Image: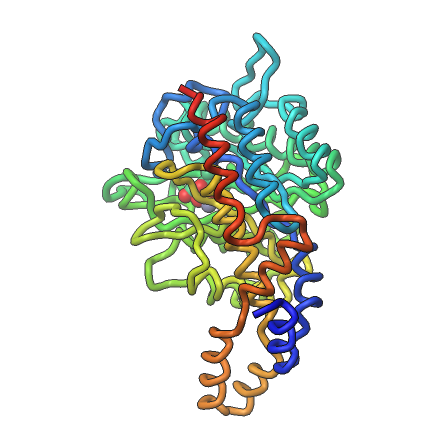
Length: 418
Ligand code: RNT
Ligand code: ZN
């Protein structure tokens, strides 16, 4: 089947494939830098353990070991992905001059100047994250610590990150989503569940007292259900994070990571619930297998469902900030980036090709038999042809044509990293 024929099949259902392609071309999706080096960063010993309840598993050869390698890998990933991209940077990816170093509480915009240069040269926006993990000042708590010196250090880190986010947004002329996530929690049954939460709340209050333009910097609070080693209690639980965002709509927005809920809960269902109240929300798109395992995003049912909700709730008009968040060290890391990013784009295109108005009418008219038939029949439409057309129009490779590039890069560049 040709694209022309596919287009006619969709047109028969009242769907304009070119209009869908045109909308998707402009939707920013944020690619996380941390898939390239297993969340190690550049500001501390790269061989220290990853803390905060998260874990990368696998030891596939060829991970990026410095800014040059990470940027080269990112470049290849970006080239193989269609659409509008942002880069999502963690504070631990600060780039210092020779002989220079600053601890997390003393990070400055200049430590991200090389990232700004990288983004400017490629016309990318940037998002940012304070790094409240994998650092000697985790005791192991950070913003919720009972130790005032620890808590102060991490508050200062958060404030530094607000200033860096403002800098990134101003330099790149695009809003910067700044996500606050800590792995603060306890392995076993707490004696005090409220104290750490009150301290966490006060810490975020202090961080957000740092001046910033809320049109440019979008601080987010990311919730979580549990992490490895912190199974019994998470300070930044769903209720905590959502309540914080709900009480501070002039300062921050909620962030949902679809790896951070109980297994029968789905973020797709939570998107319209939040959009009924919040003008703007943010997402970390990932793939949990039984737990927050951060597997590469696939073109699977829940990813499609998340995209459908983003599209039909008007999320593409700037109300939903979309970012990827996973880290797989068991396969080629550049390929992991590309597969996940392309799948988010695929899911969004798939959602844009649904005759949403007609289906909604069927639901509102109580015609559920027909609704089921129509929804099921959409699944066998020639979506792949429209996807490949989208890739062509974006100057990105079609399915079936890019893996050789990864293989060659692995052989020529990544295998030499020993
Ligand atoms: C961890 C959170 C958090 C991190 C990144 C690296 O469970 O999802 O978003 O993955 O900040
Ligand atoms: Zn996340």
